[in-house]
Image (cartoon, rainbow, N blue to C red):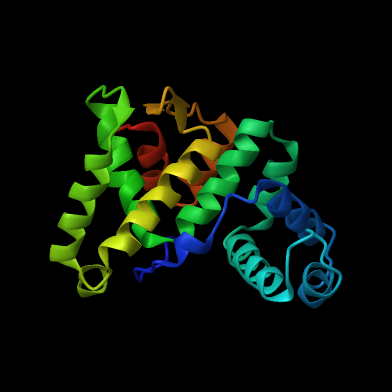
Length: 200
């Protein structure tokens, strides 16, 4: 389920795959959230520079994992690395409406038309369209939109949806694991399948 409100919070997020995996491992082992928080914040499990940063990372990871049920968590630990990264990516999409819409409206369309690369203008056009649709987005500064765009590119690269060579961002659509695809279909998230693979 994609969150309903637009937020620029994604500028503060990283892919955090190792951290995500460690957090999920504790969820799978039924470790209480308060104990996980103590590990991350009080004991600095991830070696972060200060307590404030640790609290923020804990909060983002908590939100990501709250969007996952036991079935997909089990799938995660039985999947290969590329599928694990996609599950992390999907958890980010579920928590960021603006990012999901970018993947669904821009990345998906680029795949459909056979485009080779993502261009800087793609994000500019996307945000101009969103400004018309949303007062929230219209109130974001150009600097904020640029930072969001940079976050999009970094997260897509970390998830292997983009491959960077010679400063060009080549589009590399994922091949979904069949079990992950079945899970998304069963949970009514065909839009995520379409967004990631370009299927119409």
